[in-house]
Image (cartoon, rainbow, N blue to C red; front, side, top):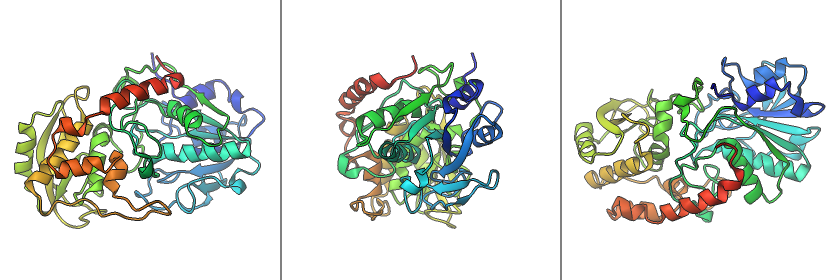
Length: 391
């Protein structure tokens, strides 16, 4: 059976859930149907939908703006509708943005990992919608990593940020619709009226390859499914001075720096026997972000068995190996201030605590680093049970 995404289910129902309502839409070009037509295109072309405003998350409606670049408020070229930026001067819809709206529809492709900004954007939408009496409709999409793997540490409250607001595991095993229901009921101080249009035909055991759907880039650095599979672990490279491959064709699949020996690193990592992955020496020239314009040497991670791959443990092992081989040039990104948040190191905000960084510095084993994760993930599974939409 073919998997239908939420927008296809909503369309096949004749958009009856939106009848008589003035609608805002938060989306980008990652949201497509099976024929690769965008949700904005589909809704704008149907007279059953009174679409009056658009909302843009990080990377903009085009899903092409660079990482961390502010999105500009303006008008959409296709429809002429106002586009309200939710990644710039504000992350949260204002009263003026919501004025005259009955509902906000949200449709973006999530990647199933805590450190991603789209769930944060939806969480702020739900908070504002709850305050102002606007309902929220989530058009669901499959979790590309599947719905069975739940793994990783919690997020300590003082490290909450836009790259991860809530104490969920790194791989949470939920669809964006399920996660949104959980966030609204558990952590939203002003719960909104939230409904989810579920996918049809998706099961928790299915990964993206099983859906029959084409992969549309979720964001500029996650253009390929091979990068999404590594991302739960490789994103942690962002918290170091190593390049994670931004500004190259292989972001989140490579790691390097000008002072690394890629051949040596590949040998050491392959000797460790990480399941489902092999490492190859690889050199690259970033055109953006860290080491922009300088040749970097390192490795590319090739997934040989996506079912066996353990990206979080693997990439913690990569970081620990580089840290031990190059104790002097290796460094963590220094603390920085973002808005009014307390200054904190980016690695800590990603992994969820200062503890892991300090353990890597001390040469701790993987068993020591992952101690307590099992218990937290079991508790999270139980906590999330009421919000599951799929068998």
